[in-house]
Length: 454
Image 1 (cartoon, helix red, strand yellow):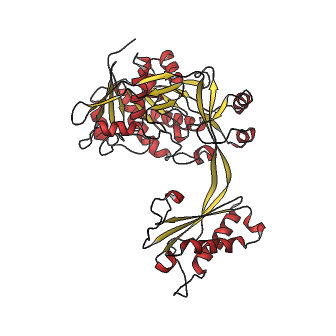
Image 2 (cartoon, rainbow, N blue to C red):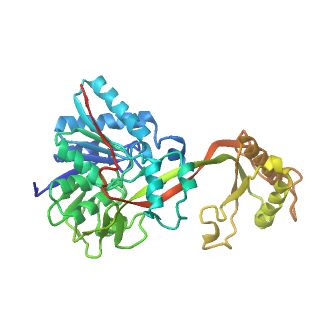
Image 3 (cartoon, rainbow, N blue to C red):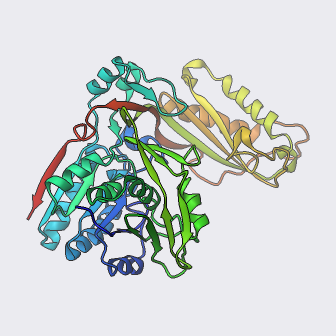
């Protein structure tokens, strides 16, 4: 059934990061049709997929889920939480489901929830790979059978279809907890379910999945009001506002093309989009179009264990050493290379020189800048914890005592702010599956379980 207005409340861009209750309650007072919040990202690295860790603590998720579920039940509106735990694996969907059960028992709630799983059977990926239906997503190598074997788990980013299936089969659902999702998918699904144009549905979801990052200054809580011809973006804080510039700029967030935004099942085309002020705080967006794709593809994500990491943090204030830091670090590398091969164990030694080019590396636009001080982080990755610490130790000794031209001190070259001097960071992980896979039925790929908690 086609509606004239659909209102969504988004508490923040990431579950577990916190949000202001006064702004959230202000949004509730606007009678939203649903609440939606994302929980996933690959930005914080591959360890979630490879090791089963989560972006935030269980207690942080529990605290915010209690607020959101209570609000949903009291206002008789569904709550969508996507990409559980950060990576959206089945394991983390189950953890979120356990949290919801605990909260229901604690508060005496009757709770109808749907769990949507995103783990993909490796045999499915192997079959698709053999059929030539898996391609790189961006500048990555083609997928191999070894990559599939090495990945601890593989998830796929679901589009709107699994959510649409839940909304059709259980229109009175209270809570949807999903695995890895394309970030705008829950909001787009609710909009499509209620008869709104796909272009506006996906565009509103694309902006609001980040909460209030489209405001000046950036904020947390937002309300989106979707109409048949446009949508309005409404900040809920006292000091924040949306402007056409801030909204248009955020539309380009994490994208490689200025107006074509690919996702599951098609591409959002913003070439005809308009961004217009409604008030000093509210911006209206119109003209966005969605171009379906054939074949339908989903993005696969996987990560593998690679070894172990150890670091050392060092400060340098000597201008004589700073002036020749590159050849000095080469001398440290030569010292490390003198270790017996059985001690180095195919290790990798990386120097991060903050104050010089630690952020930009070879892309640093001002390489001739002479800083007053440097922070050198020694990073070592090796097959075993022992080798990582051994190499890091030798590099730290080189930083501390290697000679350099013009040296005036007879003791240490560096300051060491932390003990232990070599700091083990545990396992090293790497993304090794980041590919697009063609699918025939995008809903069938993601199993759904319905649970009633009394």
